[in-house]
Amino acid sequence: ALVANGLADAAILLALQSMHAQKGVLPKSIQVMPVQFEGRMSEVSVQPLNGLIDINNASVVLLSDLYRHAGGMNPDSAQALAQVTVEFRQTKSTKGRAQGFDAIEDLLGVSGMTYELYAKINHLITADLKTGSGRVNPLVAPAGVLQVLTGGDVARAAVLAAQRDADPNLMDTSFLKPEQIEMASSSSLRLQVKVGLPDGSTLQKTWHIYWSPDPRSGLPWRVLGTQQSMQRSTPTGQ
Image (cartoon, rainbow, N blue to C red; front, side, top):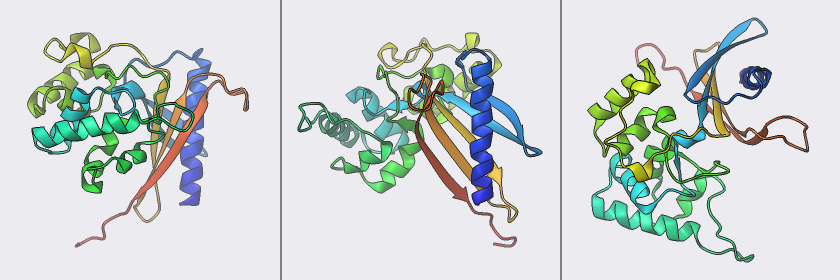
């Protein structure tokens, strides 16, 4: 696992170096970058974070749609929890500033948020957008977020994803709520890679970065946070 973690970090760093070599041109769509390190090929997924739902800036309506269509809540409960979420993030700190969410896990501190609900939505949200508008870019949104934007219409979300993957210019967003979407690129990115282990398990490593010079390291990007998870293999016959 330690070796796999090192390989994953190396793959993500190589992907970042490749982006820097391209003069820092940021992706306008979800991209998969093949990289090679120590004789091993890996694929690093690069996704602008404004394809996820920003819990620090999303409107009550968008949060309600998230809780309802991704979390399975009834409309009234979803609306109430969305309102409580916004009130929670707007609570003033001792310095008089809105406390917001430093990480998506902080959402568990909201009254009414259960771990069961959190587990259903945590892959669709972010707290790492530095300059978030509260809207979502459907050109870089995963399938689950597209389902939220389409009001829980799984079939329509699948059509949108297929149109985008064929040609982003073909994606028909006219029926989405205009106040919930944007087409702007983002400097906040999520890089993700999976590395297989000898026992068949898979380690997944995720970096959230902000593409802006870091005065401390001298690098052209800032690391906002990292996460890793392990998917265990299932023994044959079980």
